[in-house]
Image 1 (spheres, rainbow, N blue to C red):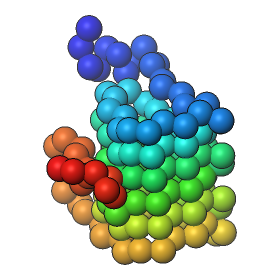
Image 2 (spheres, rainbow, N blue to C red):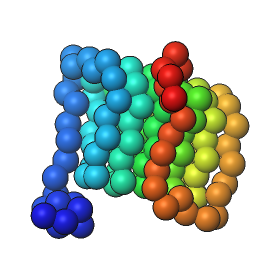
Image 3 (cartoon, rainbow, N blue to C red):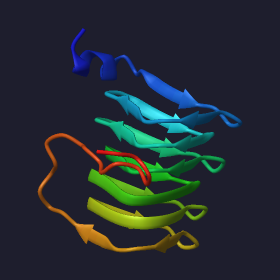
Length: 130
């Protein structure tokens, strides 16, 4: 199957509440995180971090919706980042577009990049080697 066929089938990776992952995640399809990920998240599709979700590492994706917490050095989103009212983000953002709801917390810098990244590739997670 081709990458586009997998996305069209609606494949979604789910990290459930109470689940803890030590290490990086790489996927071509959508990913929902309601648990904890200590490592990088790389997706060529959409990432959703639910209200109970926590990511401590770098994230690179096409689109992201954040309701939970993110602690990162680099959050690279080629299209749209959406910070919901319950979101808490610490780190630097590079995105095509950004939407921030009232109540969302963001500490860091934000750079709007009108050129889309060909392949999402984040920097290593804190403490991880290149």
